[in-house]
Image (cartoon, rainbow, N blue to C red; front, side, top):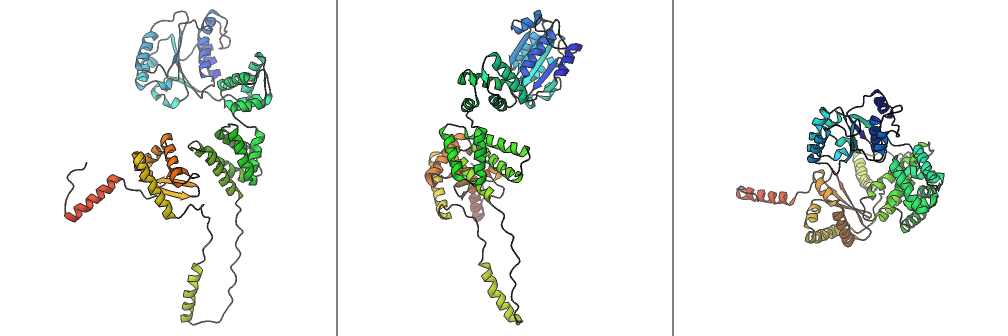
Amino acid sequence: MVRTLRNAVVAGEVAHAYLFSGERGIGKTSIARILARAVNCLSPEGGEPCNACKNCTTILANRSLDILEIDGASNRGIDHIRRLREEVAFAPTDLRTKVYIIDEVHMLTNEAFNALLKTLEEPPRHVVFIFATTEPHKVPRTIVSRCQAFDFRKIPEEKIVSHLAEIAKEERVAIAPDALALMACRANGGMRDAIVMLEQAISYAGGEITIEPLLDMLGLVGREVNEKFLHAIEDGNRKAVLTTIDSLVERGKDLEIFLADLVGTVRDRLSQGSETERRDIRLCRGLLDIKQDLFRSLDRRILLEIGLLSLMNDLGEKPSAPLGPPPAIPQEEELPVEEKEGLFSSVVPEKSKIKPPVDRPVDHGNEGEFSHKWQAMLRAIEQERIAIGAFLAEATPRLSGNRVTIVFHPEHSFHKESLEKSANLQYLAGMVHRHLGDKIYVEIRLDDGVVRAPSPRESLREKANLVCQVFDGTIVKEE
């Protein structure tokens, strides 16, 4: 991408429109500014601006009227683009080329894009447009087709470490190598985020930055803690797992970030060719499942504890020993057919009484008691939140262990999405705790196998149809 832009500047064949896309903080706007200087530089060097000529110094000092940076989020209407179209027709004031840099261009309205399209089709020779966006899929194809599009990649961690070290040296701040590596990793390929993190660390730790204060600032724990926690899960050490979670909560650590770091640690194991690959895959998959449910939970600590204990049980399961051949039945003398039939008829019922043991959920009372409590909760909800009560009336509740699963038919996906809104879910969890128990938590999902419950309107229509059948009538009007 850089080579393409340099060659275009050297050859004097700069395109009239560019589209820079990529994640935040990886240099889209910075490259756009450099390109704006390069196309106006009086003595470019290999396609790069000299940053010393009159035009370059004017642009660097933000004194040029021909370099315009526009925020697409706050100037997204058609009136702003119409004004831009009028300004484009005028020749540059003090530079050779007018450059319009529109950041977050995907925020423009459809009307604004349509107004801009005509200008991109027949642009003046003295104008270059540079669009930057983090969501290129939201830019209309008619716009993209008239631009040279470049997809920016994440910045490698080693380059982020090198740049942060240079900044720290200029600021006369001592920083440990492991602290630099941690900031580069947490930046996730974004240089801007890394620089902001360094500025915050300088303010937090002073003139010397080590790994311990950096972990406290970011709300993280060290890799050693992650490894010990994973070993505790693998060894089935429930006390160590629960004690570590208690410590994290008391110290104000973000449990979701902690869980993400655990997943990253297991992923590193797998990438290095772990001898326990099968177990690590099961462990990573279990941690990802817990992480997926964590952001929707009102009590993250309980969900994390229960999820990890369940995962430890799954990891601790061993395949059952293969069954041997059935014992030999002693040979007896031949019996008449009638006696054989009598023998078999008496033996089969006895065999049918033998049932394999099954894992049963934690007992919260029999099914009738749960149904009674559920109906009482529904009546209370209908008195306070009639909409939530109407949604729940079309659901199938299931109790298993410490979890109440509210199951909807896929046709009722709107009900599920409505209940999962933060305010509704918080209210529902409170009602469940009040009526079913403090240690019960809620899960809402769709299931093709569940019987679709009829809506109140459908039930009323069925009753009306029955009345019509009995009295040979017809429905003349529906309210």
